[in-house]
Image (cartoon, rainbow, N blue to C red; front, side):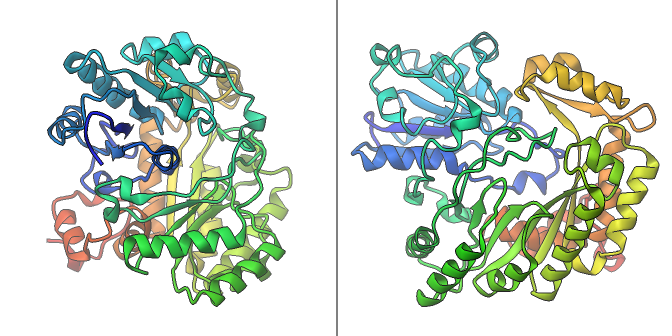
Length: 476
């Protein structure tokens, strides 16, 4: 699968983890399933393909590994994916180093939630990239391999696609994990749908309509195929969808397909807290659902309305309460996501904590994140003005322009540093070291990573910097 005729796909890594540069955060493995879908499509059309994740590795080391394996230089463009704004610095170093070593190799970069359809900014930020592709690329990826002489004829390579229709471009592709040398370290992902369209102010997919969900038959077929590829049922697929929303008919058909194929695979998904029928929880638990990432965001009615999460916070929180109890009663781990938003106060945070306290026995873990503003958030400066009316200010407006994102001072009494302190304090209130490890091991830590290795790392970490509590007896 090597040689100078290989098509190389690179998922840009991160020079420093989003939530702090600790050894625990650097263990996380984030599968770029979108890029793997493109690589699979190219491979199925007869090309030799290799996909690598930059992770937290040095970009120069990744390039050296590709060179030593004999697949670079290559006559095809290198496909560089930008899955996050936090990847830009890594991508810049990688593309610059690649051009210094092999100036004849072309680089094509894409990342619909990062570079946005702004050619001048993208080129300024990544000057060594030869072509930027906006939107999704499944319908154009084969033409992109034709070289610069064909690029000018490819639709939407330097212009925006309408984000409201992007989600409906293609059905989610199947994935060939064999294209990754280290695929066994990752738990597999299964793309279920794209889009959301609920118009939450902080969400990059707020204006992208929800796509039709992958069929139950296709879902089960892929699960069976993953078991064969991994030669194991001890995998925990992530059902990837910004808003996983199966209908009652879908749940019934999936349960039938799952049972008839004799599956025992457990899986994870992400969804809102206010739109699932509680009656579906027991059925999904019976056919493998083990972890739900729930986008609660806040227990404060005022903040829920401010962030556009709901217009009826009372009903919203009632539905969230019902869902959490259903998860508990059916043995499903609920990991609750909380967002500290613009205008947050000690009182609104206390409301959220009080709400979570009342459901502590339903919660496996809590992930708390302060608001981050991204440059690709539509009319970002109008959004910044909206946030300023709630008392929030950017930590660094120059960083928004340079790196595509900025942290936020939530108001004059909760600057960003205080918000970071609060995220850890709130998370520790509900999540033990064992809870944290179990949730991470289920989806993000290497599949062979052990509890013993986890504890060895903890021995050198300051307790006040951990997002979970740790029994005193466990500390040296």
